[in-house]
Length: 315
Image 1 (cartoon, rainbow, N blue to C red):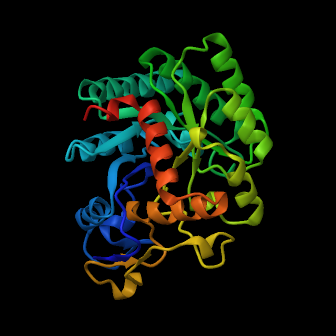
Image 2 (cartoon, rainbow, N blue to C red; image 1 turned 135 degrees about the horizontal axis):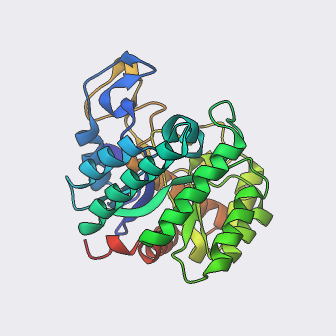
Image 3 (cartoon, rainbow, N blue to C red; image 1 turned 30 degrees about the vertical axis):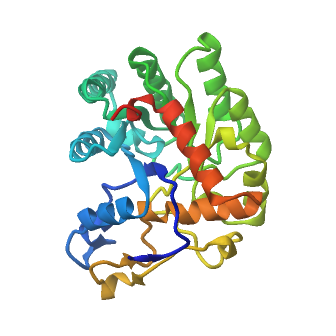
């Protein structure tokens, strides 16, 4: 076994994993450190009670690659959409280029709907922390165009929100005010205030929690108040690892054999590179903060994921 933890009879759904990242090909910041090891990463996930994994995509090409990867295993699924920071580089400068892009995105979603492998529109939303990649107005246009497509294809939303005040909330209020029966969504990697979380939940949305949601005591105070029936867990791997300096790290029970990227060893995790198997650590911190069992967190999150992403249930 590659981990040391209490034995568990429960399983997990990781609703957000960036499995297309170069780190799983052994490439770190442009440097080749070891051979590609994604098959080993996935095997480690299955060994550690992962039941389903959703591969996140942020561009057209990533959506194609994510769908191809998802089709290699009945436990893998994916999203299709354009990340807010990539709207400028992806959609182009003309209305024709925007229209052509959206048509191709629709084609991919329709392809992935045949076998139920594409389970959400995303990763879409707004990100004001990285405006050097894409300005606000282009992000908003990209969001609204994708919401229009989500209406047409009837997919739930996998949402990104970073330092946007109430802008994303306001747009989503309009979206659901038009038709409250539209599929819901999840605001993933949530690290904002309890007030904003409550407003998202009031729209019927779920809140996605990962290591980036658990860094500070303020973060933990918010997570403590999120009801289990509105919570989902994710790794956002290879990012958002829970570090010793993070406020909730003392709640972690599960440890994995880990080496640095320069001293890579088959069968071990890589320091600073999260994997789906680390979902256990996310659940342990949430359980510790809420003073409940890890099993309760795992079960509730899984039930919520199957409720929102219904295409995963029958796979």
